[in-house]
Image (cartoon, rainbow, N blue to C red; front, side):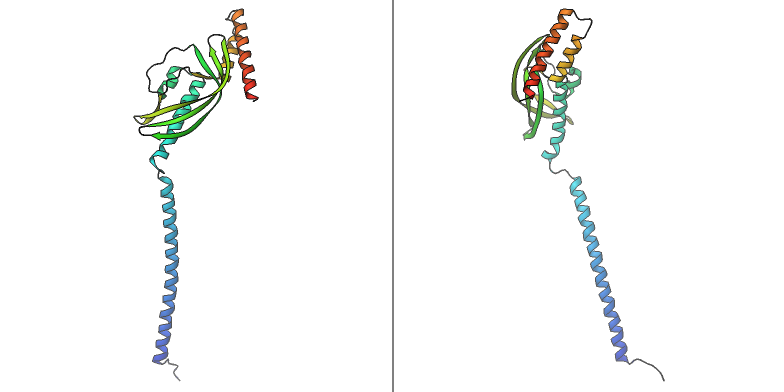
Length: 209
């Protein structure tokens, strides 16, 4: 006896198979779409991170880095050849005095047309004048530095300091080295020691407040 399917039953079976295939294709399509959406989100996120947020924000970090280098070089009592690359003025007077600084803080950069202004707060302990004079005068001074773009880099355009700054620690090391220099006279070595003690005492007093 022949086991044959009726046309109707065969049609129903073939239709069922076709419907099930469509169901499988729909699920696969959803999975593919989900993967594509995820890939697009990842690519968009990477592109967003690779692009600068905006011109102003992107330009602030080089500005601050330039200013920090300049400020630190001056506090380290660097030579003209070392810090002049970060400024626009061609020359400076020969100062006999320097502000003695125990610490400083660089503020936020502010865009102002063709320049950027950054405030630096100095905590000073007094004024040192060569070779041995030190006037203790602890105070806080704010200097508003103006930086401009020159070619592809940023430079400090103002202000030219009234007196340059020097770190208290750097000055103390210099005075102590001079006090131990055998080529200096006995009187000068004693003067270096006295001045170093005055600065150390003032520094200790201001640090304790």
